[in-house]
Image (cartoon, rainbow, N blue to C red):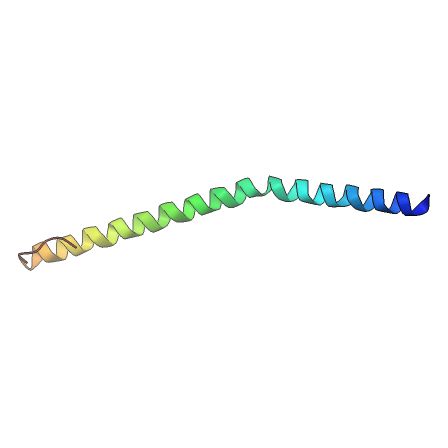
Length: 64
C-alpha cells in the first residue's frame, strides 16, 4: 500500500507543477509581444531618421 501512496503523491505533485507552469505561459506571451512592439518601433525610428538624413543631403534615392 505504501508504494501506491508514494506514486499517487508523486503524480499529484507532477500535475500541479505542470498546471502552474502552464499559467505562466500567458506572461511569457505578453512579454514577447512587448519585445516585438519595441523592436518594430525601433526599426521605424531608424528608417525615419535615415529618410530625414537623405532628405537633408538631397540624395536622389530617398528609400532606406
